[in-house]
Image (cartoon, rainbow, N blue to C red; front, side):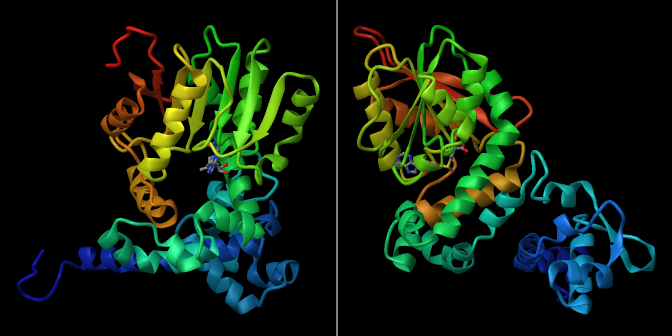
Length: 350
Ligand SMILES: C[S@@+](CC[C@H](N)C(=O)[O-])C[C@H]1O[C@@H](n2cnc3c(N)ncnc32)[C@H](O)[C@@H]1O
Protein backbone atom coordinates (compact mmCIF):
# COMPACT_ATOMS: atom_id res chain seq x y z
CA UNK A 1 0.00 0.00 0.00
CA UNK A 2 1.48 3.41 -0.98
CA UNK A 3 0.16 5.55 1.82
CA UNK A 4 3.01 8.06 1.53
CA UNK A 5 2.28 8.96 -2.10
CA UNK A 6 -1.26 9.92 -1.09
CA UNK A 7 -2.60 7.26 -3.47
CA UNK A 8 -3.86 4.22 -1.59
CA UNK A 9 -3.98 0.78 -3.14
CA UNK A 10 -7.24 0.84 -5.15
CA UNK A 11 -8.34 -2.49 -3.63
CA UNK A 12 -7.91 -1.10 -0.10
CA UNK A 13 -9.75 2.07 -1.09
CA UNK A 14 -12.61 0.07 -2.60
CA UNK A 15 -12.84 -2.15 0.47
CA UNK A 16 -13.15 0.89 2.72
CA UNK A 17 -15.75 2.43 0.41
CA UNK A 18 -17.69 -0.83 0.60
CA UNK A 19 -17.48 -0.95 4.39
CA UNK A 20 -18.52 2.68 4.61
CA UNK A 21 -21.55 1.93 2.41
CA UNK A 22 -22.63 -1.09 4.50
CA UNK A 23 -25.78 0.71 5.61
CA UNK A 24 -26.74 0.92 1.94
CA UNK A 25 -26.47 -2.86 1.62
CA UNK A 26 -28.53 -3.41 4.76
CA UNK A 27 -31.07 -0.84 3.57
CA UNK A 28 -31.46 -2.55 0.18
CA UNK A 29 -32.00 -5.91 1.88
CA UNK A 30 -34.57 -4.46 4.27
CA UNK A 31 -36.46 -2.70 1.46
CA UNK A 32 -36.59 -5.89 -0.63
CA UNK A 33 -37.91 -7.94 2.28
CA UNK A 34 -40.49 -5.29 3.28
CA UNK A 35 -41.65 -5.00 -0.35
CA UNK A 36 -41.92 -8.83 -0.51
CA UNK A 37 -39.65 -8.95 -3.56
CA UNK A 38 -38.48 -12.52 -2.76
CA UNK A 39 -42.09 -13.68 -2.35
CA UNK A 40 -43.22 -12.06 -5.60
CA UNK A 41 -40.48 -13.48 -7.86
CA UNK A 42 -41.76 -16.85 -8.97
CA UNK A 43 -39.83 -19.81 -10.31
CA UNK A 44 -39.51 -18.00 -13.65
CA UNK A 45 -37.11 -15.02 -13.71
CA UNK A 46 -38.82 -11.71 -14.46
CA UNK A 47 -38.10 -8.08 -15.31
CA UNK A 48 -38.68 -5.13 -12.99
CA UNK A 49 -41.60 -4.07 -15.24
CA UNK A 50 -43.25 -7.46 -14.65
CA UNK A 51 -42.53 -7.46 -10.94
CA UNK A 52 -43.47 -3.84 -10.10
CA UNK A 53 -47.28 -4.20 -10.34
CA UNK A 54 -47.16 -7.36 -8.20
CA UNK A 55 -45.66 -5.46 -5.25
CA UNK A 56 -46.90 -1.92 -5.88
CA UNK A 57 -43.50 -0.47 -6.81
CA UNK A 58 -42.08 1.97 -9.35
CA UNK A 59 -40.52 -0.17 -12.12
CA UNK A 60 -37.47 1.96 -12.89
CA UNK A 61 -36.52 2.30 -9.23
CA UNK A 62 -37.25 -1.34 -8.53
CA UNK A 63 -34.77 -2.31 -11.25
CA UNK A 64 -32.06 -0.38 -9.40
CA UNK A 65 -32.92 -2.21 -6.18
CA UNK A 66 -32.84 -5.59 -7.95
CA UNK A 67 -29.44 -4.77 -9.45
CA UNK A 68 -28.06 -3.71 -6.05
CA UNK A 69 -29.22 -7.02 -4.57
CA UNK A 70 -27.79 -9.03 -7.45
CA UNK A 71 -24.25 -7.78 -6.95
CA UNK A 72 -24.40 -9.37 -3.48
CA UNK A 73 -25.80 -12.64 -4.79
CA UNK A 74 -29.21 -11.96 -3.22
CA UNK A 75 -30.72 -12.34 -6.73
CA UNK A 76 -29.24 -13.22 -10.07
CA UNK A 77 -29.30 -10.79 -13.00
CA UNK A 78 -29.86 -12.76 -16.18
CA UNK A 79 -30.09 -11.69 -19.82
CA UNK A 80 -32.69 -9.18 -21.05
CA UNK A 81 -32.84 -7.41 -17.66
CA UNK A 82 -34.50 -10.38 -16.02
CA UNK A 83 -33.85 -11.29 -12.39
CA UNK A 84 -34.15 -14.74 -10.84
CA UNK A 85 -33.85 -16.35 -7.43
CA UNK A 86 -30.64 -17.47 -5.75
CA UNK A 87 -30.25 -19.57 -2.62
CA UNK A 88 -30.11 -16.34 -0.58
CA UNK A 89 -33.27 -14.77 -2.00
CA UNK A 90 -35.23 -18.01 -1.52
CA UNK A 91 -34.31 -17.86 2.19
CA UNK A 92 -36.04 -14.48 2.38
CA UNK A 93 -39.43 -15.83 1.25
CA UNK A 94 -42.06 -15.76 3.96
CA UNK A 95 -43.16 -19.35 3.30
CA UNK A 96 -39.64 -20.79 3.18
CA UNK A 97 -39.05 -23.48 5.84
CA UNK A 98 -35.83 -22.46 7.59
CA UNK A 99 -36.23 -18.97 6.10
CA UNK A 100 -34.63 -15.80 7.45
CA UNK A 101 -37.09 -13.00 6.62
CA UNK A 102 -37.64 -11.95 10.25
CA UNK A 103 -33.97 -12.29 11.15
CA UNK A 104 -33.16 -9.67 8.48
CA UNK A 105 -36.06 -7.44 9.54
CA UNK A 106 -34.86 -7.67 13.13
CA UNK A 107 -31.22 -6.87 12.33
CA UNK A 108 -32.33 -3.79 10.36
CA UNK A 109 -35.21 -2.67 12.65
CA UNK A 110 -35.89 1.10 12.72
CA UNK A 111 -34.34 1.54 16.19
CA UNK A 112 -31.01 0.19 14.87
CA UNK A 113 -30.79 3.10 12.42
CA UNK A 114 -31.02 5.51 15.35
CA UNK A 115 -28.70 3.54 17.62
CA UNK A 116 -25.69 2.78 15.38
CA UNK A 117 -24.61 6.44 15.04
CA UNK A 118 -24.37 6.48 18.85
CA UNK A 119 -21.84 3.64 18.98
CA UNK A 120 -19.13 6.24 19.49
CA UNK A 121 -20.92 7.41 22.65
CA UNK A 122 -21.40 3.78 23.83
CA UNK A 123 -17.68 3.10 23.37
CA UNK A 124 -16.84 6.21 25.40
CA UNK A 125 -19.19 5.32 28.26
CA UNK A 126 -19.41 1.51 28.06
CA UNK A 127 -23.18 1.91 28.47
CA UNK A 128 -26.14 1.08 26.27
CA UNK A 129 -27.56 3.96 24.19
CA UNK A 130 -31.08 2.60 24.22
CA UNK A 131 -32.27 4.16 27.44
CA UNK A 132 -31.09 7.70 26.58
CA UNK A 133 -32.75 7.34 23.16
CA UNK A 134 -36.08 5.80 24.12
CA UNK A 135 -36.43 6.59 27.82
CA UNK A 136 -36.72 2.97 28.92
CA UNK A 137 -34.81 -0.30 28.73
CA UNK A 138 -34.85 -2.37 25.58
CA UNK A 139 -37.28 -5.13 26.60
CA UNK A 140 -39.58 -2.56 28.26
CA UNK A 141 -39.59 -0.60 24.99
CA UNK A 142 -40.49 -3.72 23.00
CA UNK A 143 -43.29 -4.60 25.41
CA UNK A 144 -44.76 -1.12 25.83
CA UNK A 145 -43.88 1.08 22.88
CA UNK A 146 -43.23 -0.91 19.71
CA UNK A 147 -45.47 -3.96 19.25
CA UNK A 148 -44.33 -4.37 15.64
CA UNK A 149 -40.65 -4.55 16.66
CA UNK A 150 -41.61 -6.91 19.51
CA UNK A 151 -43.40 -9.24 17.11
CA UNK A 152 -40.51 -9.09 14.64
CA UNK A 153 -38.09 -9.90 17.47
CA UNK A 154 -40.08 -12.92 18.68
CA UNK A 155 -40.50 -14.23 15.13
CA UNK A 156 -36.81 -13.67 14.37
CA UNK A 157 -35.86 -15.68 17.46
CA UNK A 158 -38.23 -18.45 16.41
CA UNK A 159 -36.81 -18.46 12.86
CA UNK A 160 -33.32 -18.70 14.26
CA UNK A 161 -34.45 -21.52 16.59
CA UNK A 162 -35.97 -23.38 13.64
CA UNK A 163 -32.52 -23.43 12.10
CA UNK A 164 -30.70 -24.53 15.27
CA UNK A 165 -33.18 -26.33 17.57
CA UNK A 166 -32.43 -29.83 16.24
CA UNK A 167 -28.62 -29.63 16.59
CA UNK A 168 -28.97 -27.83 19.95
CA UNK A 169 -31.36 -30.53 21.22
CA UNK A 170 -28.79 -33.15 20.08
CA UNK A 171 -26.02 -31.32 21.93
CA UNK A 172 -27.85 -30.83 25.24
CA UNK A 173 -27.32 -33.59 27.78
CA UNK A 174 -30.64 -34.56 29.40
CA UNK A 175 -29.30 -37.66 31.11
CA UNK A 176 -31.10 -38.10 34.42
CA UNK A 177 -33.28 -35.01 33.81
CA UNK A 178 -36.98 -35.14 34.65
CA UNK A 179 -37.66 -31.38 34.80
CA UNK A 180 -36.09 -28.79 32.48
CA UNK A 181 -36.72 -25.07 32.04
CA UNK A 182 -35.85 -22.96 29.01
CA UNK A 183 -35.34 -19.48 30.43
CA UNK A 184 -35.90 -16.66 27.94
CA UNK A 185 -37.16 -19.42 25.67
CA UNK A 186 -39.22 -17.01 23.54
CA UNK A 187 -42.07 -18.77 21.75
CA UNK A 188 -40.76 -22.18 22.87
CA UNK A 189 -39.36 -23.74 19.70
CA UNK A 190 -36.33 -25.31 21.40
CA UNK A 191 -38.38 -26.57 24.34
CA UNK A 192 -40.91 -28.18 22.01
CA UNK A 193 -38.06 -29.90 20.12
CA UNK A 194 -36.54 -31.16 23.39
CA UNK A 195 -39.85 -32.49 24.62
CA UNK A 196 -40.51 -34.39 21.41
CA UNK A 197 -37.17 -36.15 21.90
CA UNK A 198 -37.58 -36.82 25.62
CA UNK A 199 -41.20 -37.87 26.23
CA UNK A 200 -40.61 -38.53 29.94
CA UNK A 201 -39.32 -35.01 30.64
CA UNK A 202 -41.53 -32.18 31.95
CA UNK A 203 -40.66 -28.86 30.32
CA UNK A 204 -41.14 -25.28 31.51
CA UNK A 205 -41.06 -22.26 29.23
CA UNK A 206 -40.05 -19.18 31.22
CA UNK A 207 -39.98 -15.77 29.57
CA UNK A 208 -41.23 -12.25 30.21
CA UNK A 209 -44.98 -12.01 30.97
CA UNK A 210 -45.50 -10.05 27.73
CA UNK A 211 -43.78 -12.74 25.64
CA UNK A 212 -45.22 -16.06 26.89
CA UNK A 213 -48.76 -15.39 25.55
CA UNK A 214 -47.16 -15.79 22.09
CA UNK A 215 -46.00 -19.38 22.84
CA UNK A 216 -46.29 -21.74 19.87
CA UNK A 217 -49.51 -23.69 19.60
CA UNK A 218 -47.55 -26.97 19.73
CA UNK A 219 -46.34 -26.04 23.19
CA UNK A 220 -49.83 -25.03 24.33
CA UNK A 221 -50.95 -28.54 23.33
CA UNK A 222 -48.22 -30.04 25.51
CA UNK A 223 -49.37 -27.75 28.33
CA UNK A 224 -52.95 -28.98 27.99
CA UNK A 225 -51.59 -32.55 28.08
CA UNK A 226 -49.86 -31.76 31.38
CA UNK A 227 -46.36 -32.19 29.97
CA UNK A 228 -45.33 -28.59 30.03
CA UNK A 229 -45.74 -25.38 32.04
CA UNK A 230 -45.66 -21.91 30.52
CA UNK A 231 -44.68 -19.21 33.00
CA UNK A 232 -44.06 -15.47 32.78
CA UNK A 233 -41.48 -13.76 34.97
CA UNK A 234 -38.16 -11.93 35.19
CA UNK A 235 -35.29 -14.42 35.59
CA UNK A 236 -33.28 -11.76 37.46
CA UNK A 237 -35.94 -11.86 40.16
CA UNK A 238 -37.06 -15.49 40.27
CA UNK A 239 -36.94 -18.89 38.57
CA UNK A 240 -38.96 -22.09 38.89
CA UNK A 241 -37.91 -24.20 41.89
CA UNK A 242 -36.27 -27.60 42.04
CA UNK A 243 -35.66 -28.47 38.37
CA UNK A 244 -32.77 -30.62 37.16
CA UNK A 245 -31.64 -28.49 34.20
CA UNK A 246 -31.79 -24.70 33.67
CA UNK A 247 -31.20 -23.71 30.03
CA UNK A 248 -30.45 -20.16 28.85
CA UNK A 249 -30.14 -19.88 25.07
CA UNK A 250 -28.96 -16.51 23.77
CA UNK A 251 -30.11 -14.76 26.95
CA UNK A 252 -27.03 -14.10 29.11
CA UNK A 253 -25.53 -11.58 26.69
CA UNK A 254 -26.83 -8.52 28.51
CA UNK A 255 -25.06 -6.58 31.32
CA UNK A 256 -23.05 -8.67 33.79
CA UNK A 257 -25.18 -7.65 36.78
CA UNK A 258 -28.26 -9.13 35.11
CA UNK A 259 -26.33 -12.28 34.16
CA UNK A 260 -25.14 -12.68 37.77
CA UNK A 261 -28.64 -12.17 39.13
CA UNK A 262 -30.03 -14.85 36.78
CA UNK A 263 -27.23 -17.33 37.56
CA UNK A 264 -27.60 -16.74 41.32
CA UNK A 265 -31.27 -17.58 40.91
CA UNK A 266 -30.26 -20.96 39.49
CA UNK A 267 -28.29 -21.54 42.70
CA UNK A 268 -31.19 -20.37 44.89
CA UNK A 269 -34.06 -22.04 43.04
CA UNK A 270 -32.30 -25.06 41.53
CA UNK A 271 -30.50 -26.05 44.71
CA UNK A 272 -27.49 -28.39 45.06
CA UNK A 273 -27.07 -30.77 42.12
CA UNK A 274 -29.07 -28.65 39.64
CA UNK A 275 -27.34 -28.20 36.29
CA UNK A 276 -27.17 -25.15 34.03
CA UNK A 277 -26.53 -25.10 30.27
CA UNK A 278 -25.97 -21.87 28.37
CA UNK A 279 -26.35 -22.06 24.61
CA UNK A 280 -24.74 -19.10 22.90
CA UNK A 281 -22.10 -17.98 20.47
CA UNK A 282 -18.63 -17.56 22.04
CA UNK A 283 -16.02 -15.16 20.74
CA UNK A 284 -13.06 -17.51 20.74
CA UNK A 285 -13.80 -20.05 18.04
CA UNK A 286 -16.82 -18.43 16.43
CA UNK A 287 -17.40 -19.87 12.98
CA UNK A 288 -18.87 -16.52 11.86
CA UNK A 289 -16.61 -14.02 13.55
CA UNK A 290 -17.77 -11.01 11.46
CA UNK A 291 -21.36 -11.57 12.62
CA UNK A 292 -20.23 -12.31 16.18
CA UNK A 293 -18.19 -9.12 16.51
CA UNK A 294 -20.97 -7.00 14.95
CA UNK A 295 -23.51 -8.62 17.30
CA UNK A 296 -21.16 -7.90 20.20
CA UNK A 297 -21.50 -4.18 19.43
CA UNK A 298 -25.25 -4.50 18.69
CA UNK A 299 -25.69 -6.00 22.19
CA UNK A 300 -23.74 -3.08 23.67
CA UNK A 301 -26.12 -0.63 21.96
CA UNK A 302 -29.40 -2.20 23.03
CA UNK A 303 -28.87 -3.98 26.35
CA UNK A 304 -25.40 -2.83 27.41
CA UNK A 305 -24.37 -6.45 26.86
CA UNK A 306 -21.73 -8.44 25.03
CA UNK A 307 -20.62 -11.66 23.42
CA UNK A 308 -18.59 -13.66 25.92
CA UNK A 309 -15.43 -15.70 25.98
CA UNK A 310 -15.49 -19.04 27.79
CA UNK A 311 -13.09 -17.65 30.39
CA UNK A 312 -15.39 -14.66 30.98
CA UNK A 313 -18.35 -16.96 31.54
CA UNK A 314 -16.31 -19.21 33.84
CA UNK A 315 -15.54 -16.14 35.99
CA UNK A 316 -19.24 -15.18 36.11
CA UNK A 317 -20.18 -18.76 37.08
CA UNK A 318 -17.67 -18.56 39.90
CA UNK A 319 -19.01 -15.22 41.16
CA UNK A 320 -22.56 -16.61 41.07
CA UNK A 321 -21.54 -19.67 43.13
CA UNK A 322 -21.77 -22.15 40.24
CA UNK A 323 -19.33 -24.87 39.20
CA UNK A 324 -17.99 -24.42 35.64
CA UNK A 325 -17.79 -27.74 33.78
CA UNK A 326 -16.57 -26.54 30.35
CA UNK A 327 -17.91 -25.86 26.88
CA UNK A 328 -18.15 -27.44 23.43
CA UNK A 329 -19.41 -26.36 20.01
CA UNK A 330 -22.85 -27.35 18.76
CA UNK A 331 -22.01 -29.11 15.48
CA UNK A 332 -23.46 -27.50 12.35
CA UNK A 333 -24.11 -24.16 14.08
CA UNK A 334 -22.11 -21.17 15.33
CA UNK A 335 -23.29 -21.90 18.91
CA UNK A 336 -21.63 -23.47 21.95
CA UNK A 337 -23.01 -25.27 24.97
CA UNK A 338 -21.48 -24.02 28.22
CA UNK A 339 -22.15 -26.27 31.20
CA UNK A 340 -22.02 -25.98 34.95
CA UNK A 341 -23.97 -26.78 38.06
CA UNK A 342 -24.84 -25.95 41.62
CA UNK A 343 -22.22 -27.64 43.83
CA UNK A 344 -23.36 -30.17 46.38
CA UNK A 345 -22.21 -29.55 49.96
CA UNK A 346 -18.47 -30.14 50.22
CA UNK A 347 -17.99 -30.20 46.45
CA UNK A 348 -15.26 -28.07 44.82
CA UNK A 349 -16.46 -25.41 42.36
CA UNK A 350 -13.52 -25.42 39.92
C1 LIG B 1 -32.24 -13.12 22.25
S1 LIG B 1 -33.78 -13.75 22.78
C2 LIG B 1 -33.50 -15.50 22.75
C3 LIG B 1 -34.75 -16.29 22.58
C4 LIG B 1 -34.55 -17.81 22.53
N1 LIG B 1 -33.95 -18.33 23.74
C5 LIG B 1 -33.69 -18.14 21.33
O1 LIG B 1 -32.53 -18.48 21.47
O2 LIG B 1 -34.24 -18.06 20.22
C6 LIG B 1 -33.80 -13.33 24.50
C7 LIG B 1 -35.05 -13.79 25.19
O3 LIG B 1 -34.95 -13.46 26.60
C8 LIG B 1 -36.18 -12.96 27.02
N2 LIG B 1 -35.95 -12.10 28.21
C9 LIG B 1 -35.46 -10.84 28.24
N3 LIG B 1 -35.37 -10.39 29.50
C10 LIG B 1 -35.82 -11.40 30.29
C11 LIG B 1 -35.96 -11.53 31.70
N4 LIG B 1 -35.62 -10.53 32.52
N5 LIG B 1 -36.45 -12.69 32.18
C12 LIG B 1 -36.80 -13.70 31.34
N6 LIG B 1 -36.67 -13.64 29.99
C13 LIG B 1 -36.18 -12.50 29.48
C14 LIG B 1 -36.70 -12.20 25.82
O4 LIG B 1 -38.09 -11.97 25.90
C15 LIG B 1 -36.31 -13.14 24.69
O5 LIG B 1 -37.30 -14.11 24.44
